[in-house]
Structure formats: structure tokens, C-alpha cells
Length: 286
Image (cartoon, rainbow, N blue to C red; front, side):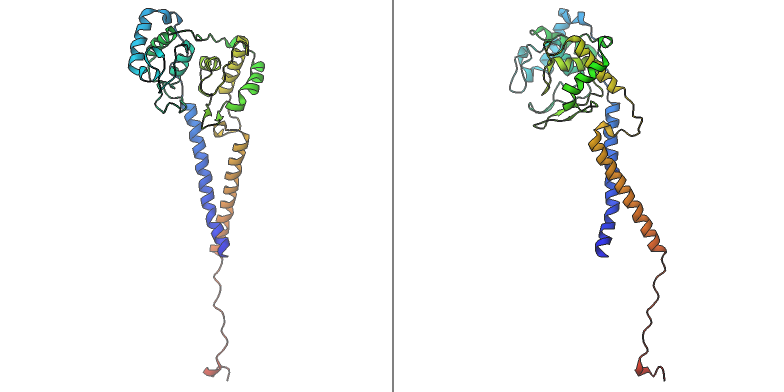
């Protein structure tokens, strides 16, 4: 009985842990849904060649970027050289909030709200683009992409890291592939041609513009998918979602059984006092 009682006392703990886990995953999903890119992805490409815009960007770079990337973007122990990063790289990192990077040099930059206004980002992009040769901000044409082709390419080249739903996943050396839930079409395209972090660069020899547009179109479709089955759990994947369902379901069932058993035990009548045999010394039975 003692062992059984100890096991029964663990039921509320299991149930509470299940509820807490579900709440944590729900908060994660909600945070992803609430995060957004307030700048959109429209860029005045003509302004990037304006000397005044480049000069404004140079001043912003001197104030906020030179301590890591060095004068003229030549790099330093705290940051890589960006002389050939190009407009696409600067635009990707700045609009996704990955730069400025507040962590250690070897720490992966994470998405956060942009630190600069749209105009300031435009100035910085113009300056970085002027430092050397690099990929330009792409023109994304979703209508030119093929959805089925994009799905095939995504599953074959991207899902291993970003998961089949684009929810992201863990990589080696403490790195991770970020969720694509809030990435804009241009940011998705830019990531493929600049290869941030551990992501490979998809060169023109690897994918054509039409294929890149197809992948972007497919990812945008993933972003718009609903959850007809109910709570999405952040789309973390079928195996962990099944584990959560098993833990919550089993914990809930055990809690129900525990409460029913406790109620029935409380309603049971207490046992009567045992009848003691008569003591011969009292003279009973004479």
C-alpha cells in the first residue's frame, strides 16, 4: 500500500508537468505568430546608388558597426570582413534584426526586432554595397515560381534543417536552423544566395531564379497554412507532438483515475471496531 500511495501521489505532478509543457509550447507558438517584420521588404534600389545615401550610411556604420567589422568593413577579431557582403547580405541581417549582434563573436545571431528605421537600413545597405562586389537585393517574383517544384526542392534541400513545416531545428555545435514563419519573401531569397551561418549558398549553378522563386513561394504557402486539427504546438513535428499528446493524455487519464479512486475511498464506511473475546477473569459467561 505504501508503494501504491507514493505512486498515486506522483499523478498530480505528472499532470501538472504535462500542462506546463503544453503551455510552454503554446507560448512558443504564440511568440512566433506575434513576431513580424515591420519594415516589409520593399527597397528603393535607386537610392542605393545615391552618394548622399551612401554618406549617411557611412556615418551610421562608423557609429554602430566599425567596432566589430572594422574601418571600411575590413573585419576585426570581433566580426568578419564585409567588403564583399553586398546589399543582399546587409539587407538580410539588418531587416531581420540579426545585426547589430549583441552576443559573442562565435554566438549565432538570432532574429529580433530591427534596431534601425527603414531609412537608416537603406543608408547602411547602400554603404555596405559600396564597399565591394556582392549579391544585390533580389527581385522576388512569386508568380513565376511553381508551387509543386518548390515543395520538392524544399523537402530535398531545406527540410532536413528547417523541418518539413519550416519550424526550424537544432544543428551541430549549438547552432540552430531558425523558423521561417515570419521571414519575408526577400529575406528567404536572400538567405539562399548569401548562406548565413551554417546555411549553404545556393549559387546560380545550383538553382535557377525560377527554382529560387518556387522555393520562396512554397515557404510562403507554409506560412499561410492553418491548423484545422486544433492546437499546433508550434509545429514542432509529428514525433515530439505525439510525445506531448501521449504525456498529456496519459497524465490526464491517471489524474482522472486517481480522483475517482480517492472519491470512492472517501465515501466508503469506516470499518467497525473488532469484537474482542470475553475475558474469563471478569466472570463473563458465568
